[in-house]
Amino acid sequence: MLNLIKSDLYRITRVRGLRGSFWQYGLAILVVYVFLVGVALFAKSQVYASLTGAADPIPSDFSSYTEFLASMTGSLVPLCVCFMVVEHSLQEFKSNYVRSVLSARGGRLSYFGSKVVFAGVLSVVMLLLSVALSTVGAWIGGYTFGRLDGPVELLGWFVGFWINIWALAVISLVVAYATRVSPMSYIFAFCFCGGVFPNLLRSISYLARMLPVLEVLRPVLETLAAWMPSSSLENLAAGGRLFGMSSADIWGPSSLALTVDPGIQALLTGVIWIAIASAAVLAIARKRDI
Image 1: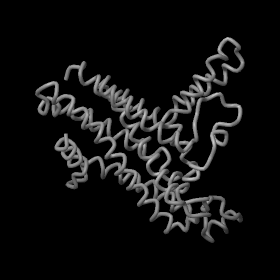
Image 2 (image 1 turned 90 degrees about the vertical axis):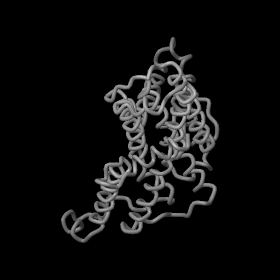
Image 3 (image 1 turned 120 degrees about the horizontal axis):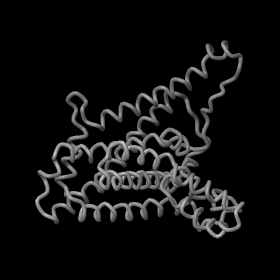
Image 4 (image 1 turned 60 degrees about the vertical axis):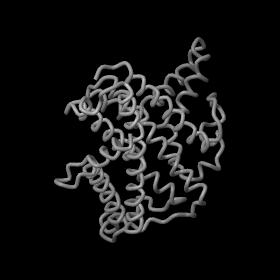
């Protein structure tokens, strides 16, 4: 399995011609960050003030460093990771690479298991890249932070963001391996990262309030929406202070969702969905023809 992961990392980091997906998606992230920092600098300039006659309308002050990182990372990095995982996995089928490395059912499970681990490694690598670029951008753009995050807040935020991105990547793998259809895999990956499914569940839950027959489904719908990786990433946008907040602060006093402290829930959500999606990937590996 280790050799398979090393092979995957080598192929996505090929420097020659920047053909590795790490460089391609990394450059895309860099371009977005350069644009955001450029806009922030322009909004603070005398040129902008003379053109509009207004003060800087773009916020450059954040309550904490992790809140700034979350605003920069957003859905961009999770989406890039999911697209990279889908692209990499489908390309191996198209090039018949999978057939060349699989010889037995045991080898099959090792191969697909390595893809789950690879998704986790890729998630942390891309998140570290985002943190590094964002930190440089904060220095260049003159962003300020109201307070410093404590070690627990900083580590909790980073781990929470990482494992939920990992969860989204493995969920995307499930669709890619189950269908092996590129458009569908990319569309579902986008929906997973964009929070389409939890928002849909919340919309149905809202409608259930007006239909007494469906009222009994509200706790189930709201609980499912609350325990999805994209919901956890949305909550982690608050930064490390999420680990000092209560469920009512996030979901509101009228929520019927079964929840725990939001910081702990963000960590548990990632772990739970990684386990569920990994089991689905291995089940597909056993049943689906190569």
